[in-house]
Amino acid sequence: MTKAIPTIQKYMTTTPQTVGKGQTLAHAMKMMDEVHARHLPVLDGGTLVGVISERDIAMVQNLAGSNPEALKVEDAMSQNPYTVAPDASLDVVAQEMADKKYGSAVVMQNHKVVGIFTAVDGLAALAELLHTRLGVR
Image (cartoon, rainbow, N blue to C red; front, side):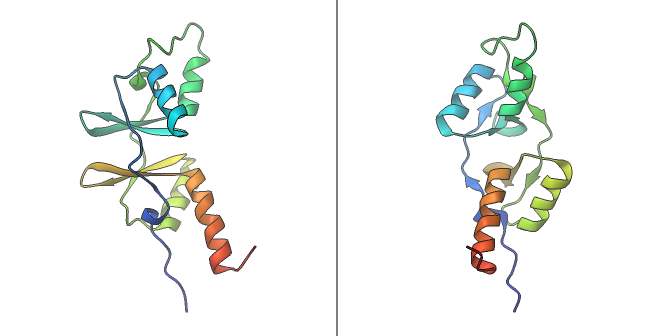
């Protein structure tokens, strides 16, 4: 008997911290540090407009003369983030993230951010599935 492939909802981080596009990079960095996150969905008036990652911030900080107190999240964020529904199949999302080298998928329901699924969440899912389905220890 084959078991059904789980959905993203089982492994996503629910109600992730978000940041406004007009906030400073310094504010986003502080938020990431406080909640131990590497990705933040970026909102504009409650609407998802991007995602910012530690890597995005690091790239901007490496530019000569950049000031995280003056630069805005929208200056460093990735636009058009990869989004999925909570009932998206884990294998489909993992394959898309691997193929496109995405670090995260923003989970959306009724046009609202309800979660985030990151590569770290994917590794946790892999470990759980190996332990429970293959009996690997």
